[in-house]
Amino acid sequence: MTTSDDVVVKAVGLKRLYPITKGILFKKKIGEVRAVDGVDLQLLRGETLALVGESGCGKSTTGRLLMGLEPADGGSISVLGDDLAELNSRQMRAKRRDIQMILQDPYTSLNPRMNVATIVGEPFAIHPEALAGRSRSEAVRELMDRVGLDPSMVNRYPHQFSGGQRQRIGVARALALRPQIIVADEPVSALDVSVQAQVMNLLLDLQQEMGLSYVFVSHDLAVVRQIADRISVMYLGRIVETGEAGSVYAAPAHPYTSALLSAAPIPDPAAQAERERIKLSGELPDPADPPSGCRFRTRCWKAQELCAREEPDLVALSPSHSVACHFPETPDDAN
Amino acid sequence: MSDLQVEAQSAQAAGPESRTVAADAWYQLRRNWVFWVSIVLIVGISAIVLFPGLFASEDATTSLTGGCQLEDSLEGPGDKFLLGADQQGCDVYSLSIYSARTSVTVGLLTAIGTTLIGSLLGLLAGFYGGKSDSILSGVTSVFLGLPFVLGAVVLLSSIDLPGVWGVVLALTLLSWATAFRLVRAKTMEAKGQDYTLAARALGAKDLRIMFRHILPNAIGPSIVVAVISLGVFIGAEATLSYLGLGIQPPDTSWGVMISEAQNAFFTAPWVLMVPAGFLTVTVLAFILLGETVSDALDPKLRK
Image (cartoon, rainbow over all chains, first blue to last red; front, side, top):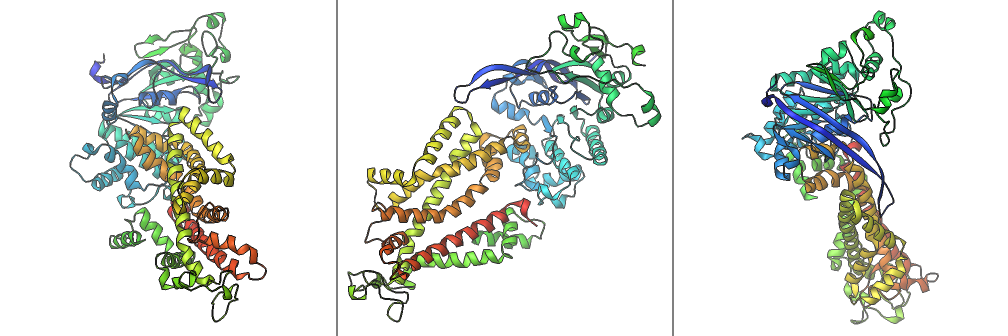
């Protein structure tokens, strides 16, 4: 169905472990947090893959691993056909022209001591070949215009802009090198709802114009619904369900996905009052000491003895929808 | 300063929108009277340091050419001596003028030296962390815990480097730890910020991240401390000179003058007050300059 040309990012068995250490001068490892523990994902050209899950589930770490900002402790990532682990530092720098990042907090992601011309121009300072004959100020003005900012404001500092404008500056910086792939780590969760919509529309327009592929990390299912083609739901470092957005929203198969969806508000008061809310009990288990078997079983209302014994694999329900659960929800359950 | 003016002029030519950081800071500074007061004082002090002959006669500071007569010992301020005479009968005013060079040199060089060494090591330790950071931080704890005078005495009596350079070396070695701590802490803070992550995602190398992104956000407090400690260093030089380890006569400094004045303070206070006054005004001028400039360079505080 999909040729390998269409896959722009492919991750297999991705792992990231953070050691828990004790002692100051002589560090002793006393355990590890399994932030990302065996994640597989594929991003196709021009599509948006949303990674959703609650805080601490490893979705942001996955984004950073894809960017090569942290070393993976296991598994492999290939971006446009090249295995990141096999690139030397010069090749990695060149690779960054293809994959860029938009960060969550526009208040900390822009250096307060640099004006906008310097911030948006920095990609060109690092990769002068990306200018392609233009002058840097010309290129910066083009980018400002493209993200909907007045190019005459290039000499202002980040604190002189609103949150939405700042996030546009972050988008301009990410676009400067004309990447094919953008990892957006909660790009709108720090913004007001009205501003969120503007930035989301900007991201959608840019995707259409430039054929971008997005990995969209978010905890907000209402936002994800606007942009995602496919959704992967993460829980405690693992993907528990993945599939076409329409299919996941209409018929969530994993109990955790159902719970997440039932927590997202519906903009129709009648439907909102009518539907059944699934309340998850308990906290996210300690990722340094995950439960045996299925990781969700401690909070699952369907858990049985099998769930504690055996970890469920991702099993395809349909060609475009997989779930890792011993007792997946059927469409009948959901209604 | 002339650089700032040049940038400001070119910025005005290009219109108000295209200001650089320096030009922006200059725009704010030139409307601040505190800045001008400190500039006038520092220009005056610099003139004294560079051309003491314009303000006083060297003859009046030495007995070699007959300028100082013992019969004038502790003569009060008046017609013969504008601000009085010291025990040797030398003119206190002239002596203070000719002492400025040594004192300001020691203060400036030590302030620059401590800031350079402390900031550079602090930046590296904070950025790379790990074992070298643990070791460097341990070393600074030793330096911070060392009794200052004792350390300087041991250093100066074991190295054979008399005069200004010995004092500067000793003071720098004993004082860089403060700048190290400040810059290291700010570096660790800036290193965890998202803008550093963004630079990394763009493919920036360590040097660019350290010097373009982190240092500008980490250096502020240590510059202010450097300017303020300039006065402390001038005072520390006085302590060492008093112990016979700093500036040696016939060279003179404000510190030497202050320590020599202590015996006669009650009968002839001017011998102490005049060099102390010069010292105070100098330190104040640098502190005022340091604070106004650091405020102006911080875009967040800009109106």
